[in-house]
Amino acid sequence: MKRCLSVFILAAVLMTVFCFSSAFAECRIELREKEWTWAETNLATFDGSITFDEVPTEKVILQLSLAASPEAADIGEVVFQTVNGKKLTLRKQSSEYVLSTGDGSAAEFVGSWKTPESVFFTKITVFLRVYSENGEDLLAEKQLTVTRSASEAAEKDDGRIRVKEDLDGWTKWIAAAAVLVWILAVIRIIGNHKNRKRESDVYL
Image (cartoon, rainbow, N blue to C red):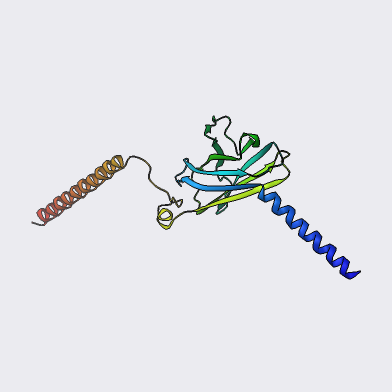
């Protein structure tokens, strides 16, 4: 009896593993950097491909998401820009895209991350998940992690107050102030000299 129970449990475990393996084998994802930037309010792009093997649904849902380090309230927006060479309009660019699996056994795409303003990140991870048409069954997932290099980190905006106005204008004001200080100093020296001369004339 115990032996039969052990065999049943082992068979159930193997079946579960097989089911999960099959589900994830139906779809394979590649994800790569394309043109990356850390500059604020810019677009960092990435691209990739999805290969289908007997996907059980006529359509799949592609879903992008982000994770950032350090964490922040505003981590920017990640969207699909093109799918299979078709450029999406700004209105249609979104973190989700419904793809028909009947169009072929593979699909290519380009995505972008719009960097937020005045937020410094050391690492960004882009996630791509592929769901079945009902949005419940996860068929595959992939992540792309991009880390800021040491040289890029050295150029970071660390929150210190910086003068953003025209430096030439500031230089002119500083030079004018310096001239005024020297003029006042000269006037004071002349005045002190005259006072000492008057005092010496009085004693004479």
